[in-house]
Amino acid sequence: MMPIMIRTLLLVVTMALASLPHAAAQDAPAQVPPSQPRKPNIIFILADDLGWADVGCYGSTYYETPNIDRLASQGMRFTSGYSAGPNCTPTRAAIMSGQYGARTGIFTVGSIDRFDWRSRPLAPPENLQNLPLNLRIVPQPLKDAGYVTGMFGKWHLGQKGEFHPSQRGFDEAVATAGKHFDFKTDPAVEHPQGQYLADFLTDRSVDFIQRNKDKPLFLYLPHFGVHTPRQAKPGLIEKFKAKPGVGGHNDPVYAAMLYSVDESLGRIMATLDELKLADDTLVIFSSDNGGVGGYQREGIEKGNDITDNAPLRGGKGMLYEGGIRVPFIFRFPGKIKAGVTSDAPIISVDLLPSFVELARAKSPDQPLDGVSLVSHLHGKPLEREDIFWHFPGYLGAPGDDAWRTKPVGVIRSGDYKLLEWYEDGTVELYNLKTDIGEKHNLAQKQPELAKSLRAKLVSWREETGARMPAKQDPQKSQAGGKRQRQRRAADGEDE
Image (tube, rainbow, N blue to C red; front, side, top):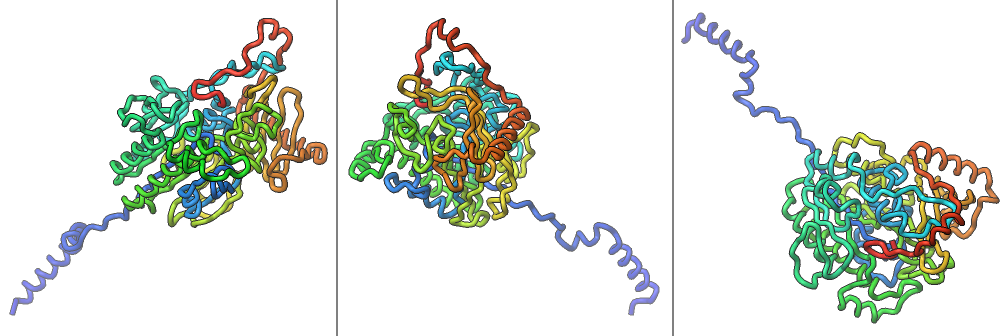
């Protein structure tokens, strides 16, 4: 038997060792703090000139969009989704910066001299053609938050030097537009002769996803389809030639172009399934403005109606619903309920704050005009007041003294929408809930509401520093020689 003195000494030593901070750690594994959940992948696919009514799940029965329709059946489809501009560049600038054109100074495509504003009462302010470098745009905060970022397609916010997307936060960027066959890219990328542009962009996007499957990724795929020139794969054209048209949806080339964009989405979705990334990925599909159509119904007899935005009024280049209401679909399995429809108004500037919240990234230190949609996508009401548009210039149309739009400001507040025409100060007021086609101007019947909404619009312009057109003497300006009314834009006369 061990002597009592020795047993007592051993007991004291054992108790002392047990009291040391590291003693327990020698016999038990260290406590590791729980890791944060994987940051979601974000994939944003943007069609070009795709109308709200051109998609199957939005009502078209001639065009075929099975993959877009499937995306909607698996996520949330917005019936009141809007582009921030009636044509390409202002919407893309708003998506990237989270700011309306009233702040960025980008309200249209190209120079104001594309159309003969000198014959009109107002002189538009100059339009910026490159997205200002002082703005932090979507890929930059995401990259800082650990994302790998890629962009393949139509950029249209400055192609050269520091304005190229590769210099604005994208790890990989290939910009291209203008043709659907025999296209060129910046930087130059080899591709099979005769390849269709939508297929090339999808190949690049699929490869980007595959190579970065183990990282959080942001993919921006801005298609050039379905923008003119009207070029499509011959087999698809023949497919739709054999199909009877429905109303203003009857162009087999346009239908074939749209089918290729839809196929692209299908390939992206299949890639996510194959890599088991679908449940970790938010996929968004939308368009940069309304479809090219509805002009003849507006009295523009020579209007080039490629499609029809009915029941919406007007089309691309107009601030009526046909020019700015677009498809908007979000899918995130397990986070967004499947098959949900929302009538909450959303707009392009909402994307940046939504992406920043999802990525747990730092918000850019600049005014943001949008709101995050994350809580609404999870089923909560969307907390936002009004949305706005500012178009202080002119967009012409084929024909004498024909215009898609003249200088105008627009506000949507709840179910109501007001347009203020800057040339003469007249206003139009519509209840979109009961009059989606904007056929019944309520400005005279509801003057107090019209006055209130106009005051909100004026206040918003002052807050954002929106530049307004200036009055001019049309006779004096015409004395110097009238300019050609229609001038072709670099990538299509219908911008």
